[in-house]
Image (cartoon, rainbow, N blue to C red; front, top):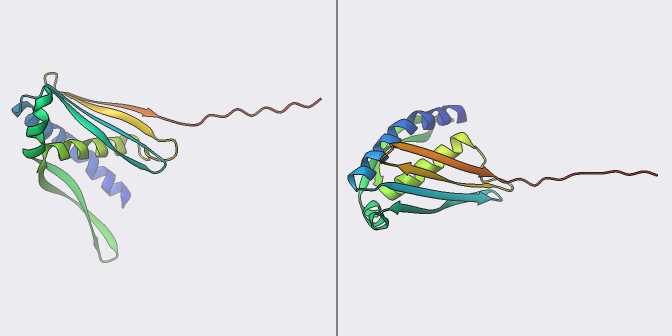
Length: 145
């Protein structure tokens, strides 16, 4: 079941990327940066920044249609499908970030956690995921005389 869900998320990334890039371009956004962090089994988006800064207000109220995987419990099993959902651009940026990070770095928020950013470079038409994983390292030594 989870494999089906992950496949749907992967299939929707390209569509959602294109929808977001078009929406950002429409609002004259040159760059949008979504930062996230998590540890100890919880994580969240820390913030969304835009260049120019004043564009952020338009992204909070203007909407974009995203293709999202939806699950429904039917006859003892989950059935997954894609559904087009209209949502504020700022929320769509957050959802896109969560989905992309989860597909590429599942469990990113567990234990020591991770952090990173997704950069939407509208002029270059690229999305870049910069991800840093944190871990505790240890070294054990035994000495006998």
